[in-house]
Length: 178
Ligand code: IMP
Ligand code: MG
Image (cartoon, rainbow, N blue to C red; front, side, top):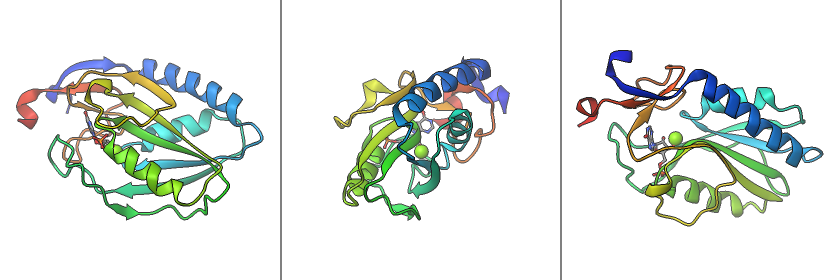
């Protein structure tokens, strides 16, 4: 697997330190709020588990799965719910935990869908953000790291379902996906 990686851009230790920082902020903002943390499958699994383990506030965890890229590296812009959350989020504080924001179309869709259930609030927490690729003006509340427009894998992020279990974030060699 590692031979397919051009470069490690965020080490395991850097991820851990940043997750701890984000957890401190969320802890401070959500004491007394009992938020519903929604992990977007499958990419956000490691981030969501590591983040919630660092939180000391009471919270609930739920999962949502959407149609993704397939095996390509470009967003289709077409999003479909494959698995919905089981929690009633009406009047609840929702934190959406995502692996990466690229065009932002996926999160825009989830955000608009959740809004219809009249939650008390919705905030978005993403491990990675590609600010130069955004195609929506959706506000992102917590960002782990900004990255460039290269295709990255590891710590939950995949290419064709591979590389998710790498413990770091790395840039995939171009010849692998082009
Ligand atoms: P968006 O709708 O364009 O923001 O796409 C977001 C989704 O595309 C993320 O949840 C990822 O699953 C996937 N994605 C976008 N960029 C990358 C990348 O560099 N590596 C792996 N997956 C990516
Ligand atoms: Mg994803």
